[in-house]
Image (cartoon, rainbow, N blue to C red; front, side, top):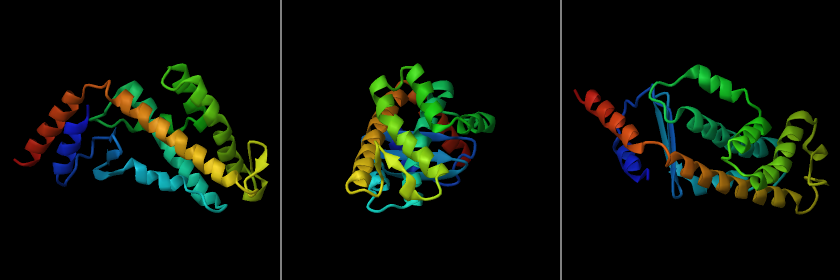
Length: 195
C-alpha cells in the first residue's frame, strides 16, 4: 500500500531529490517525481486527454503519449523498481522501445494479458498511422475513417478504458515493491535536507 508515501510526498518540500525518479498511483491519484520536479494529481483528470471531440492529430497523439509513458514506467518498475540513483541510460533504452514493443514485452512478462494486448493493437495502429500519414483524414480505426460519425468517440472511449486498465495494473505492480524501503530513503533524504 503506497498511501503512506503519498502523505510523505505531500509533505516533501523543495528542493526535491534530483536523483530520484518515482511514479506512484493510488486510487485515483498519482505522484511523479523526476529530476527534482514534483507533480501530483488525479488520474481521473487524465481521462480528459482521451476526450477527443474533434479530429486533432496533436491532441490524439498527446493521449497516446500518456499510455506510452505508463507502459514505459511499467517496464522500468518491473526491471529496476523505484530508483534512487536514476540511470539515464536505462531510461534512454526504454524510450527506444516502440509502443507495440512495450506491449509485447509486458505481455511476455505476464504483466498485461492477451486480451488487453488485443485491445491495444488497433489503438497502436491508429497511433502509427497518425505518425506516418500526411493528414488525419487518411487514418482508420477498426476499418472506418476517424472522421466518420462515431469513430472518434469510440477511439476516445477505448483509449480511456485502456488507460484505466493500465493504471490498475501499475497499481498492482507497484505494490509488489518494498514501499517501506522507498519511504525510509525519502525520510533519510528529508532529514539530510533539514541539516
